[in-house]
Amino acid sequence: MRLFINKLVLILSTLAAVIGIGFLFWILITLSIKGISAINLHIFTADLVDNGLRNLLVGQFTLALMAVVIGVPIGMVAGIYLQEYSFGNKYAEFIRNLSDVMMSAPSIVIGTFVYAIIVNPVGHVNGWAGAIALAIMMIPIVVRTTDDMLGLVPTELREAGVAIGAPKYKVIFDIIIRAAKVGIMTGILLAFARIVGETAPLLFTSGNSQYFTMNLNEEFPSLTVAIYNLATMPDQNLVNLAWAGAFLLTVFVLMINLIGRFITKEKKRL
Amino acid sequence: MESLFKKIASFSATTILLILSSIFIVLFIYAKPAMMEYGVKFLTDARWGVEVPINQPDTKATTQSTAKADTKAVNDDTVNMDDENDDNVVVNTEDDDDGAVNMDDEGDDVVNTGDDDDEVATTKTIYGGLVPIVGTILSTIIAMILAVPLAMGIAIFLSEIAPDFIAKPVGIAIELLAAIPSIIYGMWGLFYFGPIVSSIFGGGSVSLLVAGFVLAIMIIPFMASLTRDSMNTTPAVLKESAYAMGATKFEVIKDVVFPYAKKGIIGSMILALGRALGETMAVAFVIGGVFTFPKSITDPTVSIPVVLANSFSESNGMSLSVLFYLALILFIISFAVISFAKFYFLRDKK
Image (tube, rainbow over the protein chains, first blue to last red):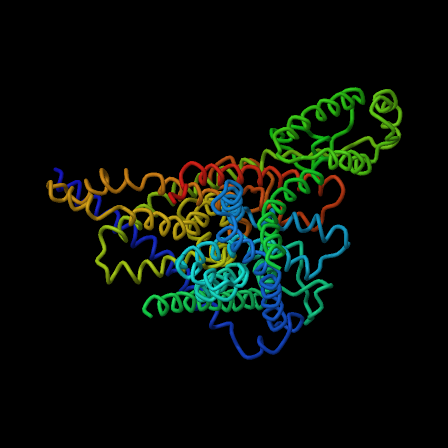
């Protein structure tokens, strides 16, 4: 009987794994079939007004990049504080937990928040608002990564730096950050992959523009928002365009994740 | 230089606290008109955007003052509200407060509303948040019921059953799938999964059930990889000694691994729950966006994030404030859920 129950449970859980993985591959396969058949050269050279994706791809990338520019310095310095300056006090522990909670805050709520503080006073949707919403999503991830990666740096390195009389900020920037560089870069890369696919915080902050623009003060093109709008259109061509966008986005995100993984692995082997 | 950098660093860390508390405060300020108007009754009112005639001006005045009392209560619940902001709020509200009349002070209102209201507005639009709130909770429950057993199965398979050369690639695949943007899941649900579910269970291709399914599929990889990680922390010595006593694999999992990793597993479930609660895009495609109670599980309904996503750009004045009220409710719920998971189950043992 014991053996029977054992067999049953093992079979059930293997089955669960097969079902779960089956579903997930089903998604990827349908996505690839639909996406690849919709991709052609035209979508890379034309903007959304002409049934292309060029402005959207560039726009989404720009938004995410601006978010990195805004979010990474704040997140990194905050992470440095938590690991290097807090000496394990209560406040740092509180901030650390708070940052973890913020990491899973609903993205749409962050969108409404940015709408309230930026879009409403300015009067229209604009690219900066989108970038800031994404940056807010990104900060806690960067804090966590920096905190963890700096924690891995051996104390001896710090002591060596202090022993030769270097001020603390020099020790941090020239020794500790350098030692943890690869890990932090990987973390930022993964955070980038996470926010580049976000839709909800952009819906009413940066909106979506039909035209090619690099002006962040205006309505800004966004791939994910466009996918959301196009996928529910009655026109089959537009739906196919949405599939192409979805496919490109997924490939891009998975590539970044794989690269991040590869870097970590390389580092471990060295 | 050194002390400057230290100041910058500690300020950056405080930014996190600042952002979180200003989300609370800003949402609260914007939601205040709606809170004044509908009060706590908002949470139990199923009407959305229904125009009703104003019958008794006196009752309106009293409801307003009770609403005010209620908001006070909410105010106490919300952390970090400073008086300064409260003052602003009062000013704001009176500007936004539905077209009615002289805003000098409350006493006046009670006396005068009678005739003024009759002249200015004979109907007002009622908003109630019950349908989206119920929709959010139901879709999350369905997703959890479906996802927990599957994710457990996958985690057990990966950490205890599969040999290394299978567990590694499958584990990586699962983690990669957790990285796929949620909008992809939503789109796939709309075009492929919805029709299949509706042909099996009946109902339309957009429904509460489809939303639950898509949410479940979306959180499975997340939950499975977290659960696997906490199962893997079980020391091999414990497992080996159980095997040495003649325990079967199932008994080892049930009596050694689960008790050891219990906190982490429950914590990962709650984190996944929080993610499902706040998920917008995967649900927006497949839940239907209709403001009715689902009579059966295959009816379309709506959830809080979807209301926000669909009606935000067309709203202004009171309807916008109502949306902020909903956002605040969602934020408080998910904040509570996630902090609960963090502080009770996922404490770092440093």
